[in-house]
Image 1 (cartoon, helix red, strand yellow):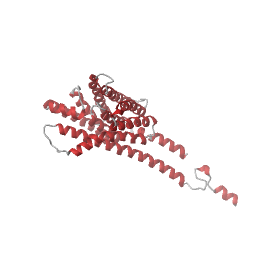
Image 2: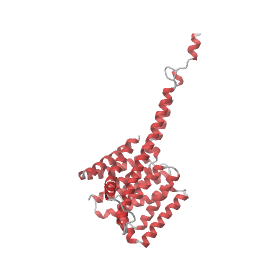
Image 3: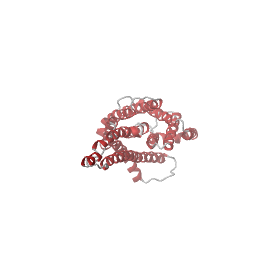
Image 4: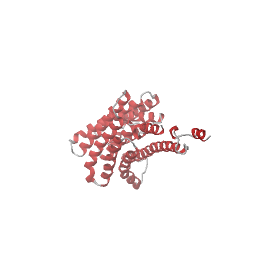
Length: 320
């Protein structure tokens, strides 16, 4: 009888604990799943906060530059928003770096975020911050994208190359590493990257129509109100020596991508495209930092950004 009882008793080789209780293993599975969800939510929340701050700053700058004032903005609100946005964007980079499991993304965003935050405190950190944003941004962006294996991945890599090159040229021109005349070329590259971002909306006709409408609106406004549009682009988006037609293409491509992301529930894509739309040209360090954040969110999928794929594989191996 005792032998039969022992043979019927569950063993540890069947996936149960020493006492025959399976609850510890179930708890391990639930904890891993909850952790993956929380990382996703952290990236989403941090991105939304950064987008709201950047959009508010750009809107305030444009409204204050209009020949008429459709909206009165208190000075204290303007000061807090404009001065606080660079710090919020830098902190967002750090938060996303801590939320990811990808080493390249973590190291790159940490460098860019920490030095970007130091630059908001002390001007002496500006030059190291420029190097950190360019180098760290390149590492994070292309480390997250990986080696392209499909047409869509190749398109993302091409867009990322345009944007990060535009950031590098603009910042190098701003700090005097290259001639100031290259600042316009850097802006042209960055806006060309934003225009090319529209390829991610391929196949979504609603998003493409939204992009065409945005393009048409900018073209119409540029023709009918050239001085108002020109001053608004200069003050709000730091656009210098860039044809308005390219600006219209960039706004159209960014709008199409943002709408497509919303329709497909790819919130990271929408937030990243929104950041690129409101930041404009990465002519200054705060703008370049925001462009880096937007490009990373838009081009690197959430699964790769937080390492959800590797998490799932590790979880399955543990459960085996």
